[in-house]
Image (cartoon, rainbow, N blue to C red):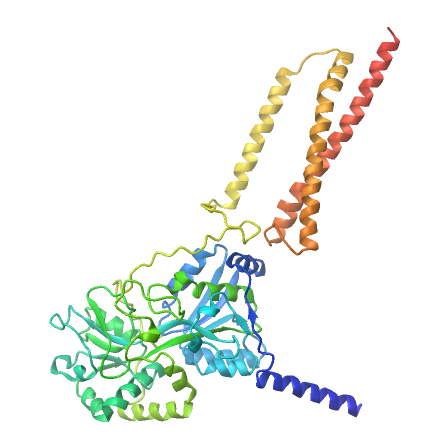
Length: 521
């Protein structure tokens, strides 16, 4: 007994070290097509739950709308909250062995290496993984990887500052014209903003910060809040450098980038939880987020995509930013705490309610141009990998289709019944039998045998592929298989079998009557 106990403990220690030291790190590399992943996700339930970092509940509404439009039947359950709150709740799920989230995309970049080391993430390389910059993904596996680029920039409202042509340095913000015009996020409330102040003050020192405070900036919580305030006519503030409105903005907003210090940019990391209840749904979501169509229109985590129609290079060649440095900054939590307390000592604790419930609605302006995308048409037909040029997806509700089919079927049966009743010839019994024998039943037998042969061949080859080759030609839902595929095809085995039997029986009967008739001649 002692030997078995010791052996068990040693085995458990081996597996524990396997997770901790990262052995067996060969990732699962996706080889399926987008359509195949889509149909696997439908079979799984058609649901994916995403927790996304952010400070406005509607920040990722476009992601939800685009995903659900691209993949009919899929439902993206999306929750946006501050990453520093999301990660605590994820830890609680992991510790309680009660994971109900599938995908996580967070700003707390330090969490992902830890979760990977703990074996909490799926070691999976989605479609497009090979195109991600190496600096934006796990160097030895595929537990986590960049899914989108975030950055801060100078943003100002030209309606409020009509004579301002450009902002090119953080020193510019100390000019008298910006007095009472700045709106900034508390650096002690957001790590990316904290990093921005750290980069600026590494160049300009604390004297710059002292001078900035004399400009009387409005301090707020949340990084979308500054852009919302400066875009609104209800506030006098007009400039920020702790927010983002993308690269392609429209009037009255303008953006610029500094030349005197680095601005913050980083790759927002995502991963799939190992015990996710809907892993195929999460894989489909990540494939969508990494698609060339979704990544176009701004800076991309993919090395093969550059901003189109914009005066900026790809993020790796953009001057005055290092999109990998924020990841390194986030790993040193002790240093972050020291910086946070420095600014808290200067500014006090962040004031105000959470930006998620502050009732500040983004101004109704267009800050990003619409990008016309053309994802591969996802169709509901099998096999899912087949390409159908020009396919038009059905938009008619299923009950209406069924009602139309039944109505058409009833009309045809009624018309046939009336025609047969009206045209039925009055033949003598013997003549009728002879006519039926010589015309109807032979033709009926030939047609029925052909129908029976075709259906048996179709079902047998399809079922052989399904159970032997694991190739399905039917949608994954149970009622599709048993009702549409099996039952409606089985009907055309039963009916032709009956009509063949009837033809043989009636033909035999007719010949017997004919023999009797001939004997009586």
